[in-house]
Image 1 (cartoon, rainbow, N blue to C red):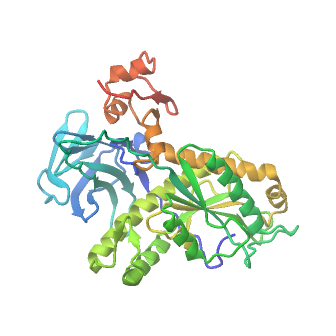
Image 2 (spheres, one colour):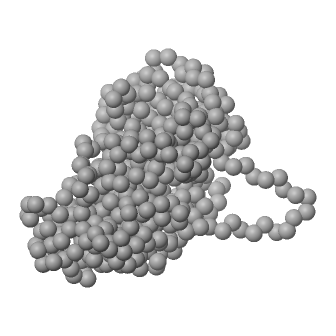
Image 3 (spheres, rainbow, N blue to C red):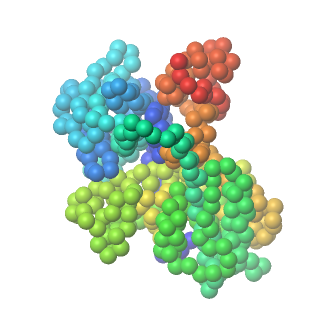
Length: 452
């Protein structure tokens, strides 16, 4: 059931590609880009940096097809922009900062514009496209997160132990509880009971998955304030937060599942709240305390963290929505946005799943059955697995597993995939018994353990 004060707002979607696990290259494209023919104008390149990240922003007049990858010795991040126009050379036009040493650009005949960021140190790139908002038009954002350097090797040392790969942590929040029953169906079905049962089923499924562990925000019929739920997830260093509910409406014919992420208005209000309370709470944003930062720097840090979290939340929500469609009807075919309090953690991707309408007699009947509850849990597990297939955190078992296999996504080429994993095209073809370079969306490639 939705919080009484929550009002769904106009949806604003972020397109592109997020790499939370330090992936070295990605092919990113906004919806509809493949059909566009008119070239995109690159108006300006802006760079800003903080203690934790360097951000380069291309101001463009429309969605742009781009490809990003890294090169080493020396360290570089390369961005290829297809079908673009550039009124002036941006090489050296923007004063580099943070991890960026110099910026170079050049057009390659028939291949578009290549921009090279020469780096002081190794960094992991992440890119996404922001749609027009307020005074800003389309923006292609490149975030460069510096990787920590290796410690000097001592003259005599014991054999190095392999790094221990961690599990990803998923926080499951069964809505309502205790004195708050949530919505109640015509047959007396209480929302708090149904969603706790679904949450427990999802918990059992996650525990069987290698590389995953679960934190139950509530595992019994108890009441927890909304912000206490966020705090518990952050205490356990959750990588994701899923809040499970059962919707209700005056119209008893309303039906279907839906998935919500935090609205821009909700994010703005939370941004102001964290800034106002940072000296008292000493909370962490992406591992950086705000209590000793001035207003400008603290605001920039929050902006970086919230932007990344919002984009990841939408990716997760879309993955969940695809799986829920296989279980039954969905209320809306797209991810919805609202100001739910439980979605306001600025550094944990968070979604709220409305499993069905408990106010609809037929859906209430289904919600009471073990089979439907299990189907919902299976769908949510499928959504989680789909999300982590491309966004597993660096240093996790899932990230290591993902390196050995690759699921073809729209717009990817065999050459780009080979460059991404630092293997030769011929080796990649031999490893997968491919006779040509042709690949298809959804195809799974096995990745060789070492390059040529």
